[in-house]
Length: 405
Image (cartoon, rainbow, N blue to C red; front, side, top):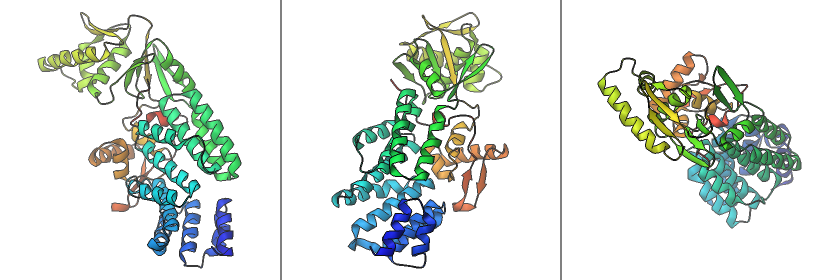
């Protein structure tokens, strides 16, 4: 690398993209293209950045595999920022192989953090946590260490572990300070605000009480029966029953928890679980079947007893606590994804939510009608945006949050 390009690289490392562009803006060689691409990414021009990085990787070709791998890693980071969740999965394994073969530990660690970030966006917490553990405590640079700590912070928030989240935040702050990058320090501080925002709502008789992450952790650690609407599960202490894939059973459980210590009428349960306003014998028969299934699922935690007017939870000891997401909206998961301020395509939202494009399109249409989201572009370039929703932590709303314990 020549002297001018080296100076541009130092400017980028110091967070001065305009200084880097002043040095290489008129050059068209592969090194300059890569530096210009990174500068444009730092300035937020992600489409232009991706184009320049793609041109640089093609120009380096197979003759310079290390330089090409670095360009591909940078392009993968831009792809994640634009929420193209499919592209990094195809390229990062080969990038990691090349970087490791050439001893580039810093960029290899950064590429692994990118892989984990993609898993988090897809809601695959178990895989992300395993990959983070494999990354090891010592990373090659302060930047990579801060990235790994931010990933650990998000996993802890999604798991509802306030203590682990605070420890990860402290590690991220220390690593960001060592890096000397102002943008990285700002990113860490923004991520840390989630610890002070409401992470859930506790539905109690006569009202609703917002809870911070630490308060949510205390509720989940109690000996009470907790119906967790953030993770769609029931739990008592370390024992948990996941119902994320059983929406009817979870709707019945929420109806029973809301009515506790009293009973939930059959009419109310049928309306909540089946969406039927007028009941008939088939609804009542189906209710009996689904209540039987719920009894089997809850057997380690609580009984479900039939009463004269309906059904009631009988936890045996303690009380029943009902946790709900910090906002009540049919499109809450979509709003949580859009709340990061990035633009998302419909296909990326469908991939992250594990849903069909058509289902996501219908939900986006409703949210747009309520002026909660906005769209930019048309056709294949259509993207969805939402201003960050102030006043609540979005992480617990995201899909795929596995039940701890």
